[in-house]
Length: 568
Image (tube, rainbow, N blue to C red):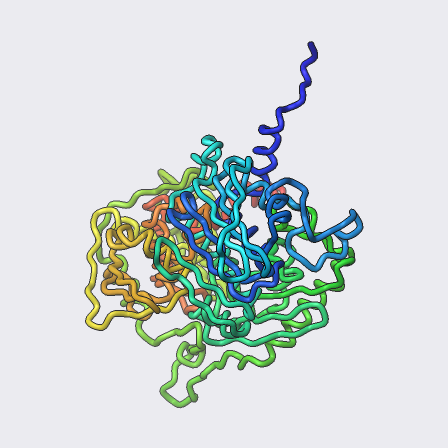
């Protein structure tokens, strides 16, 4: 008997279902897309236990009769296309006829539908129909209820995330539908709590609902792209605030992220917010390149990319440029004061840096170096700087050691020192400060879910918070964080956890990373004494990189110099 055999039909079905149904969020995605294709103007979504135990999507669309209802849960049954060529001229979301079939194969499903003339309820388990009966559904439309997702694929079910995490994934997908269909009313409940009750409105109102932290934005309208973008002053440390739709279908495309940010040019600080809709003739885009339809392929991408860049750049002209305030020169003005300035994002004060620096080094702390690799060996060295240091471009410090010439990035070195100091404080116990007036921060629902998940861990690390309907109130903060920096740091900490890969990252390291913003910024007038003190402190602690992995030193040995000048 040969080695190759045909798999049983039930195995084939479960494998195929796994490609479409990645988790509760993808069930919600497929069901809502079906509702939109059915012409629904009101969609209600409900989940329990993160969607693991129960998912419900109810719409007021066109509904189905008994015959359509019976066919709906079989693979490759669809009302969207008739022949192969139709997939290149699509105006609907679903077309493969796989969504309901795949969901039905890995769950217990109940579909109730009224097409205006008849009303029936279908029940199926693991893809097999158990009953179809007349049912008095009063309103026209369809209700799909999904119970016990992956109940018959335990190996798949155990790889689902926690209920809180799966719930957050669903929230984020619902938010995408809110943005892409502002003319549709959405009600979303999770564990009997109303997360969104969004009346039909417009993109601007939905953008403010999802991203309440963005106060400065503008609508854009190009040949192939339209949407809404933030000013350069509003940004995140990652791209979770950037959402792209092609033919109103959410997509993830690395090139689109790059092209969008390229439009900001020199104005780019971090990753700006943007909700972009790319609309091209159906024949110029292929949406059939990914099982979950998350990727697309354009037949002529360059004209679309150039339109995005051009449209974004044109829209940015609406925002006021950053203002620079320069102090008037008088007889008492020093050289350093003339160069000091203040912008919306950066401020340099006239406080003595020496005082700040001394306060940083006043405590004797045992430091732990967690770098796994050394760029070069700096242990057992003479820590005394041989000669005077040279300050280059207010940024780099050049000095001589026994074995060669070193150039140190002063800002990166000081940032690493602050990072180590904060990390050590977090390890030995946090001194927290109760705020007389709580700091109120408005964040979106999906970020609020993260705060709920991490509320105990945040408290352990100095942030005591109170979650309210429209905001999060911060009641206490770690003592080493300035109140003026709290909102930015807190948002960045929570935003880090929005990325799944960051979920395992230790919050202490995240807080230290964000809080070391207090390090001296590039461009500050560094004195020779300050430079020498930092060099010695960094060498004592054997530090070689900044908190983000960039090197602190560039080293040129005397042996290498001798070789270059042919003196060996």
